[in-house]
Structure formats: C-alpha cells, structure tokens
Image 1: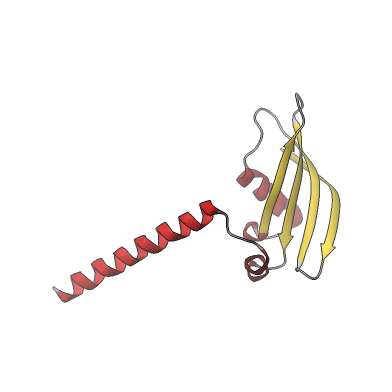
Image 2: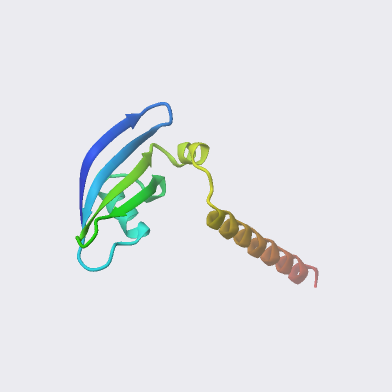
Length: 111
C-alpha cells in the first residue's frame, strides 16, 4: 500500500491538519485501520490522533482517494470529534465489564 498526499491544510483553530491523498493498493481495498496506520507512519503522528473521514474507491482501479484529519493531541481530538454509535456502544460495554470486575473483587474481599 502506497499513500501519496495531494493536499494538506493547517487548521490552527481546531489544532489539526486536514489531509487528502491517494492510496495505491493491491487486491482488496485496505481497511480503515490499515489506512490510519499508514497515514500516521507517513505523517509521523500517533495513530490515536488520526481520524479517517472517507475512502473513495475508483471503479476498476487499485487506488482510492482518502480524506483524513490529524490532530495535534488526543485532547484536541476529543474536543472536536463526536463519538460514533459503535464507539459509544464499545465504551458502554467496557464500562459494564469494569463494573462487574470491581463488584467481583469486592465480593472476594468480603469473604
């Protein structure tokens, strides 16, 4: 997978860089996670600060247009980005799991 950045726009108000580029690949279209990792590596940024907006495939070609945003920090990302329903559900499940483990630990201490 090869990423070529075509446009970079600094947005100092939101502490981010808006990036557009082209991804050349072999076989199937790369997953969002693979594109985020490759972008983070190319831009020398932490993968947790990269948000992938869109991947637009070109019909019958092995390349796609990519739109992404790279935040200066995780805090800046949390302030500007909304959580998707999938992310909310995942966080709720993790919180339930942590609460259950805490409850089990308390029961084990009291016995």
